[in-house]
Structure formats: structure tokens, C-alpha cells
Image (cartoon, rainbow, N blue to C red; front, top):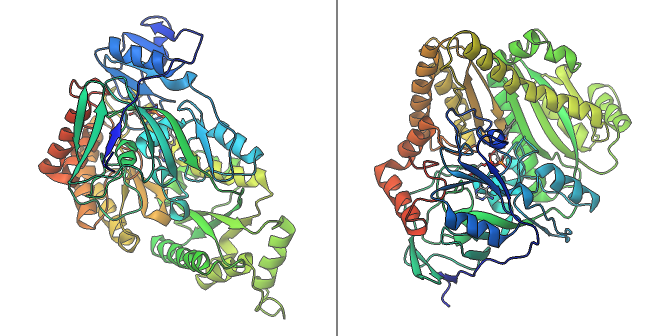
Length: 539
Ligand SMILES: Cc1cc2nc3c(=O)[nH]c(=O)nc-3n(C[C@H](O)[C@H](O)[C@H](O)COP(=O)(O)OP(=O)(O)OC[C@H]3O[C@@H](n4cnc5c(N)ncnc54)[C@H](O)[C@@H]3O)c2cc1C
């Protein structure tokens, strides 16, 4: 068979137990909403298949289906609109990790995956913030998170995939084995050969893209399904690459005077870390992620008492908090961190100036920006403090979401979360922040910006006080999208598109009518009766 051809196989029956079926009115209500709180969810039936055969039978009997994992989608992509919900939560087999990979069924959560890998001395780093998300969900959204700067997105870690097509047959795909030829794949099924066209639009050159189907003359078929949000097939098994070690990750909280200083410092931390990886320097600084919270975020943390709760004093002169995750050499204890910080801080010390440890290098970079006095370094072993600082970061979206909920309850029922998830090349980061601020401020909106600064992937969020704020916020996001595209970025970085009309509009901004038509052509080839997740990704 030529390299762009692949043969589908029939589903296997392996379970003695019947599929779990839940009809409307009993417990189906638990499946009607995802984390985006997209309104109007309804379903006639929820099925939890226990093997491929049961999954295929569910697919055969339904008019339309929506595969779901943990329904932590932030785009409405996991909200059923009359579709049969196929919950993959009963498919949770997890193979023993080998040195370099692990096999998981789609319902395995990232928390369970982490636990199993840690026990085996392995790790899977490119995880989104929410650990309840499932393997099937992160593959289907090409999820990413804070650590993309060092470790990339889900896509780079998927080595193999089994995926059920709309026909009920399966493809077992291994990375590198099926590549496009003449802008086409051929899939041999029992009913004949499916010709799948390969999109030709140009992808923005940024490390995160959760923006529809990938493109390119040399496309790997496995990549077509990763990030396809359930619209091309149902993921039934995944082989993920893993790190053959468990990195020791500590935290650094730096209170910066203003945004310019934060961006400059992040830029230095990135450059130092890239140099470390290039030179494989064991004493080098190894930052894997830098999170960013702007001035409004800090106000929210103060107002809600979160800063106090997590034992963080935000200096009065600070406008921005940076929270970096840093890999330290094994055995970097809290005492060692204190010693190294003291050595660098004590400029008169004989050893301080020449000390060459990752902590010392980190301190020097921070000291160059004159922020060492406003920095807290937490060693990997201090798990409680690391957890507290990570919780501080999560308190920011929680604070905004709570305010959206209160406004919805007390002001107008149509008020909803109004947020963007955009990425630009790092060199354009400051320009993108200016763009966001102008778009929101020129419309008189209250807003906060946080995100993964190390990737220049930011989440500008409106804090709406009225339905009109929501309308203006959506308008602002579309303006930001146009600007981000002009800067060479992607207006859909990591959360995907789902059913969100603004995100679907951003997708059209990005690839134009022609690009959307090419996506429809892929969808028509693989799912001609629009059975799989209709309305998700493509309206
Ligand atoms: C607090 C919080 C923080 C988050 N942080 C991040 C973050 O940092 N980065 C990030 O990328 N995302 C983030 N997310 C969004 C979300 O966690 C991710 O998109 C995640 O990948 C979804 O996984 P899930 O199992 O919940 O999938 P679901 O939400 O159930 O489904 C998501 C999409 O994938 C499809 N799907 C699910 N399973 C399958 C399958 N087996 N086969 C085919 N299609 C399937 C669904 O149809 C849907 O379109 C966050 C969400 C929350 C609530």
C-alpha cells in the first residue's frame, strides 16, 4: 500500500458487560453542559460504551453523536445539541508505561495518568491546567498548557492513535506511517475507498494552534485527527510519548513594576533557558513556563483575599506578577535555594559572584531587572508552597468566572464569559498586549489579562457588568483576532473552537472563506452525513 493509503478495520468486541445507557430525565442532566456553560444543551440519550463494538453500534443507531470526555471544554464543544452523547468515561484502561511511551484509553484522566507515570518514574508534560481532562479530550482539542514553551503541545506527544470513523470502522495510526500525497489521503473501508483532501492554507508559525484542521502537502494523517474536536472520528486509544524521568519542578514568583519590565524579564528567562537546552548545560537555567497576571488580576486577588489566603504579599509598586515553573537539578533543597540566593544577594561575598548554579543564574537575571527583593523561589521539594502559588494563579480565572456568574444572576441572564485565547510570535508580545488593551479600553470595558507569557499566549477576559459589555467584548475580541493575525499569530491558541460563534468567526478570519471551504471538504469526505459532533468547529 502506498504511503498515503491506509486500510480501516472492523471494531472488536472485548467486553462481557453491556454499554451503560442513560436516557433523558434520569442522570442525563449531568451531561448537558460543559465548562463553557454553553446554553441550551439537550440530548435524547447518553451511552457509555465498554468496547469498540458497542461504540460502533451506538454510532450506527444514532442520527448524530457527540463524543465527550470530562466536558471541561471552554468552547461549548462538549455540549450536546440534541446529539446522542457518547461518554468515553468507561474506557479507562491504562497500559504499563515503557521507558518512552504509554498506551491509554480515551477516558483516562490526566490526574490518573500522572499518578501512574510518577509511580514508574516517568512524566507527561504538555498538560492543560485542568487535570480532570481526559486523554481523548486533550488529543481531540490538541490541548496545551503552561509548559508548551519547553515541551510543545499534545500533538508532539501523540505517537499512535486508534480512531473510529463515522462508518464504525477504525484506523490504527502510527506517527510517520501515513503521509499525504498529491494533497490527498486514501482510506480503504468495507464500503469503498474514501478520498480525503488535504487543506492547503498556510498555518501561522506559532507554537500553539487549536484552530481547526491542520494543512500542508506532507501532512501526517494522525495529525488530521488530533485537534479535530470530535468532528472527524472518535479517539478510542492513544499511545503517548513520555519523559523517561520525573523532572523536579519548583516555582518562582516575581512581582514586576510594570508590563514592559515583565516582558523584558520573561524574554531574558526564555533566552537563558533556550541556551541551556541547546548547550545541554547541567548548571543552566531551565524555565519551562512563565505565567502572567496583569494589574487587574492583582486587584482581583487582593479584593477576593486570595493573595492573603495563599500567603502572598503583592508589593504596592507591582503591576504584574510572573509565576515561572523551573526544572532544578535533583536534590535542589529549600536550604540550597536559600544559600544560593543569599550568595548572589550578598554582593560582597567571595563565593557569591562566581557561584554557578541554576538558582544563582536565575537570581542574576532577576537582579538585572532589580526585582530580586520582590522574588520568591520555591524548591521542588516544597510541594505545599508550589501548590499554593499554582492555586494563586488559578484564583484569577476563578475570580473572573465568579463575577461573570454574579452578573448573570443579578443583572442579566444573557451575560456570559467573554474571553479570548490568542497567541503571537514572542517578538510581537508587547504589540499584542497593546492591541488587547486598546480594543477593550476604547469600548469602556473592564477586563483582565493573564496567560502563558512564555508562549505569548494570553487570555484577555472581559469582566462584564451588562449584556452590552458582552456584546462590546465580542466585538473587541474580533478586532483583537484581526490584529493578532496581522502580527503573524493565531487567534485560537489552545482551547479550540467548539460551538462558540465568536471562535468560529475567528477561524474564518484566520483562514478565510476558502480555508473554511477546505475544512468542509475534509468533513464531507470523512463524515458525509454530518453524524460526528455536528455544529462543533464548523457551523
Ligand atoms: C479550569 C480549566 C482550565 C483549563 N486549562 C486549559 C489549558 O491550560 N489549556 C487547554 O488547552 N485547555 C484548557 N482547558 C480546557 C479543557 O480542559 C481542554 O480542552 C481539555 O482538552 C478537554 O478535555 P475533556 O476530557 O474535558 O474533553 P471534553 O471537554 O469532554 O471534549 C472536548 C472536545 O473534544 C471532543 N472529544 C472528547 N473526547 C473525545 C474522543 N475520545 N474522541 C473524539 N473527540 C472527543 C469533544 O467532542 C469536544 O469537542 C481548561 C478547562 C478548565 C475547566
